[in-house]
Every structure is written in structure tokens, then in C-alpha cells.
Length: 190
Image (cartoon, rainbow, N blue to C red; front, side):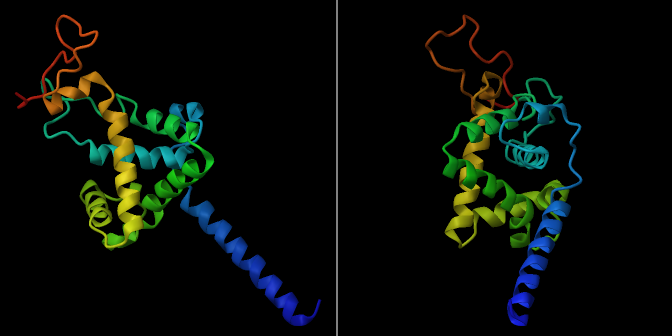
């Protein structure tokens, strides 16, 4: 190997090492003691934190969660477990793209809204700004990632009958309980 080839190889290894260190730093600081991590089939601790933060923003209630008839929190209906099962059961290309979209939301998309911190480190208002920037982006791929993640979170949230009152929906007529599906109505729903 000549000197030029040796330098190129050395630079390539240095770049690869720097990328690995950056990835290690960017995926550290998450709650690995969360008991749910042990049950995840596709999501790691940091993926779980991103999905939780995303669900908290997208499914935020209009009233205090402790108010009478308020809908359940996203963690109560296990949105992250639904997302994990969906990702785990997806074909490999879909799984790869979903995990990449979650990673981009955490590490890349905050830059669209002028943020330097990762998504999970931002305040709720700044997280909303990141999501609004994604939704209104002129880049099709960014808007597509937003809509895909939103659909996945909403499917995970609204699959639980306790959330249907938010939509003033009392469930299907098939196998309907005598008292209806929704035990408490969401405050303000008719």
C-alpha cells in the first residue's frame, strides 16, 4: 500500500470512528431502567423515549388529564407498545424506514425548526414547533415521515375505547355493551 492509500484508509477509519462516537453520544442519556424496554421487540430505549414524546405531543388532551371524563394519557393506552409491535411485525424495508424516521425525528428534524437539541430534550412548545415544521416542510420526504409517524401514533392511541369520547364516538354497534363503549365522556364532547 502506498502512502496515499494508507492516508485514505486512515481517514476512512477516523471518520467511521467519529461517526460511531457521535452515534453513541446521541443515543445515550435515555432511561434504560424503564421496565417497558425489556418487552420491546423492535424499539430500543431511545426509540421508546422518542415515541413517548411524540405521542405526548400528538395526543395532548385539551383538558387536564385529571379532569372528570378526560381521556387517558398515551402511556396508559400503551401507544409505544403498539408502535413497537407494528414495527416488529413489519417487513424489513418498512421496519428500517420506520426506525429511520424515528431517528430522524430525534436527531435531524429539530434542525428544521432551528433547534440544536434532540427532540426529547426540547420543551413541549419547541417539540410542537418541530412537528409543525415537519408537517409544513417543502420536502416531500419530511412531510411523509411526519404523516407516517402521526398515523402510527394515532392508530396506537385511538384503538382504545377510552379514547373514543374525544371524538364523540361511542364505538361500533357490533357486540356493543349495554352501557356503550365509553364509560366517561370527554369534557365538552356532545
